[in-house]
Image (cartoon, rainbow, N blue to C red; front, side, top):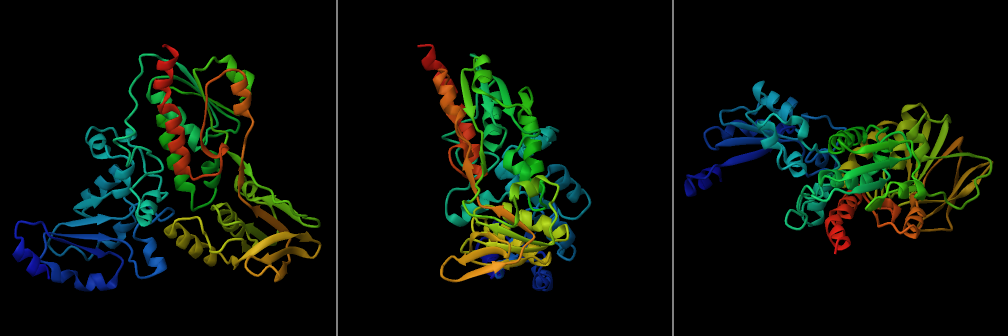
Length: 441
């Protein structure tokens, strides 16, 4: 087939993509010498659940994961390698070391299309870093346009232009430094406004920072924080500060963006005779003690899975009681598959289709999601609740009553993904120029 294509289109640059971690690929690559203009290698294959993870591997698959597999694929034509190469300095090192002749950085370029130019201009610190969340590949699998959690302009280049520096500098107050609030503050800062960001906790990042306590999300949280530390240069960040309506009003803002997020949902069930904590408390640390731990997981986010992994690592005997139709139901398949591998290897027992009824001295009671008449009781020393989240409301109404212009974004409206929250935070400020124009008319 290669010879046929080459003969039919002799001026076409012809290459072949192979799975770098495939023994079959290593066995046939020598046959490509003299037939192709380049060889391209990447991890993974789509014939198995676990193999598919390698196609677009999420963290904690290490950066530059493909590098250890390139030996044996140098058969003459230039070699291109891709899979978890996200940093331009590391890419340059791999090429200089002879690991590969060129690199593929798909997700990195989806996050920051200007990465090559910034690298060429020695502006490495200005690169907007991919956080490894796989929202881009999730869009691809859903048949929708490629988008990015960290960069809301990816896929919206024509409808969401970059902010222009304003000639009418105003004060913008943002309440909450989770993804939505960070995006709003960054957008206002990029437009040249005077920005004050309130956060009642001691760090930025919201739920993503909390999730960073678990191995699956540590890199995501770290990369997100790194990006916003740069994007928020010049912003006044008030950590460990509760933003009351009167305190906000005293700043005389032209716009207030409320991004106060959500709090854990606590199910209305009786939990007598058992110690119960929230998954968010487990992630915040330190890990509570308990030999027999049951994590009641609703299946809508990764908090229950993350808590189960941390508690298993601490030595507990963990049962993950899933109140959803499938394991990791709301996660992208590559994250879900990798999480399943990690939890099984950690010794976590996974019990499916269990709806929490309550607890007694005998243990935690569940009923089957699909056959409610079937009940079971699990012995337990510690129950961990991962039951979803509900919006933090109240502040917008108080601010409106004081006559302030208010926009809301993120989980304070209703629970949503980080991608949606960052987009909403960006859009909340993107309309400020039009708002100011109306005020001056």
